[in-house]
Length: 565
Image (tube, rainbow, N blue to C red; front, top):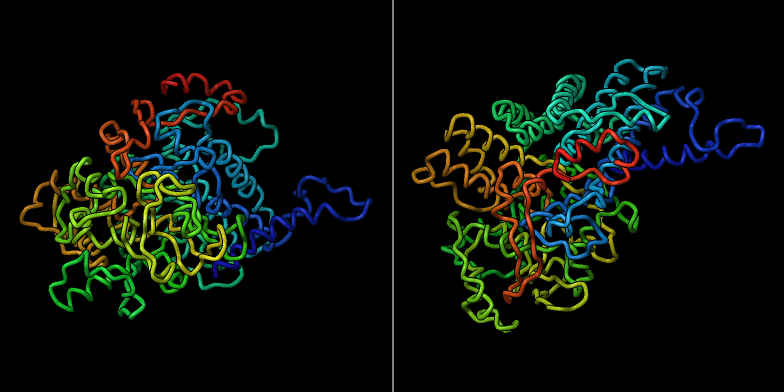
């Protein structure tokens, strides 16, 4: 169970603190656990490894855990209105310099933790097989962290051993290509020592790194750096490992509480059932109640309830509008709304910004305004709050009204509904639902993109994409017209954008596709008033090292200059 792994991480922290509270005759260091007294049992190793897993739950500018959502705020998908919450506001605006730390220092604090574990675990008297697996878990976590460092910053110091003297980290950064080669080598070496799943209980808690998660990370790395054949092969490994898209087999009256009859034209009752089943399946995959039964989540950031700001899922507060107790911290852009397909699975043609503003009529919307949201992709209704849209699961009888200009209200006119679990609405930040770092839908999209780049359209690509569409109650791709590599590439890129919206991938997708210069444009609200001016320069593909790192390591300065900062 995820709660056991989470509690174990806390236990390791408490252990390190309690070890400093013995009698005055205790000569152990008062600020750390001594190597000679700690690595004495399998439990010590377990606690140290569980402490490494905190990387997946770190809620700050590292950008892990649900803070990955802020990465969408640095892209054309969303607007992050509060610059004190994250760097996303500055990144989107193009105000990027060494005053920002996009998780550089914090990631190295975890690399130090991984290296300390790997350098010391061998001395622990414990079952050899379990030790081997623990080592593999730590190596995957370290590789994942180095991948995130390399794709954000480019060349970075590649530290493979623990250290106590900070001067030992003042080394020349390793070229990005070599860091990624190390990452892939570590993943490929570790995967054979990891199980496909965990049964639960001590040492086998759900949430640990599996072989499937390792292949999934490999696929993400390979896709990021254009290793198309390798990415397709790694994705196929995951596709053969028993994962599935989450689907609700049946729907209830509760699943149909939101009335869309004025927005969706149903051909018959079967069509209506298909729509509501797609809506429930897509939205409810992110609810805590479905975590144990779902076969979609491959790697997750785990959260618990009743933990206030410490370890709850903050999206319950960051996404909703003020009338639902939220802050509207990260809100969808009009460009994201435009990206959702129409209900026939075709590209949507939006009205002009001026026409939309007229139809919105300062909140007294007319039928022409509602037409923009009529017969759209089911995932739009499951993901976005737009004026007049219902959300009865959160509050009975609720329909979204944009509180323009009000405190903690959206600046764009829209709010995210996706990823918010309405079971946790009583207190700020108090959400127990996990945040999906990698889910099976991403793997299907990875396979489709990589395979198309290798050899163009084939039946397996359409099958992967249609599985995603079918889950959402959408029709399959029209193969007769989407029949070339370029046409299919455009569909895949847009499908990836809407399927993974608010999950943090768009920031990196627009960089690796080399389209950021086209899409990072000024954003406007529903009334066609500017929300944020945005600038793009080619150097923004990589982030600068923070000034604190430059001050510590003079060897970073030439690499910083080479990146254009």
